Length: 308
Ligand code: FAD
Image (cartoon, helix red, strand yellow):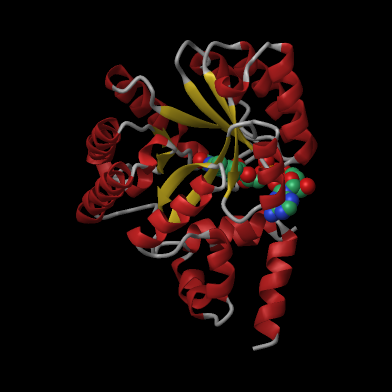
């Protein structure tokens, strides 16, 4: 019931100004975000890698309307990848990039700017010996993001893409992207989408997730199972077994701060477990989507607010 207003607030500058100033916000944000600086990101990556996790780092930011800001985000990724290379963490840590943070929405030139900036990030990742995965945003960007991904994959064949099971189109996209060498991160989807393009009930989304997972596990690529849902995780394990996949031919992924015990359990079974680790000052949209996903997070937030 609260998902719709929370997701609307995630895109509202007025709501952003209010929420960012609320006293309990910082403590809750720290549950989901490594910190604001590059040093925070590297320190938390080091700690998690020490505990057997792989990492994908997200330099927070989205919906950039300013070319200089988009270029600065690409530069921040270059600095991050340089630090991962220097510390030896690049072997276990890659990066995730939102194309809207590197220029996709900059008017008529947006796609070209985003492609150029993403290319810079991919080149830095190649130099560091690691990979990049393109996050997926709302459905109005899917064609553009997959188009840019196809262009980048000509030079960087290891580039990963995210596909969202709540979209009607995704089964077909999975078939397209399940070829040799492909890396596909399958998630349920975090945005508010209309019924014309997306399944609306959890049951329909879950069924779609399983159909997509079947395609990816049968395919010749490297499936990345991004879910905290115990049922999806169980089914992924079964499908991997039925398709004779070894532990190093697919991986589980979860968001930083969510279900750490389950993350550890999967590591203990010998599975590859990657944590999506955001850092930076632009945490607002990411944080609101996490509140929208789970009423318990919102309750915690409101309770902290009431005691201030
Ligand atoms: P849900 O249906 O939200 O939850 C199902 C069950 O999982 C719950 O009933 C509960 O048992 C368990 N669970 C979920 N959350 C918690 C919690 N906090 N604590 C305890 N149990 C919990 N979305 C996008 O749209 N684009 C992206 O690019 C994107 N990238 C992502 C990358 C990664 C690595 C991950 C993990 C998610 C990403 N998402 C992305 C978010 C995703 O789309 C979902 O919104 C989010 O993962 C919640 O869906 P779920 O599969 O965990 O299941």
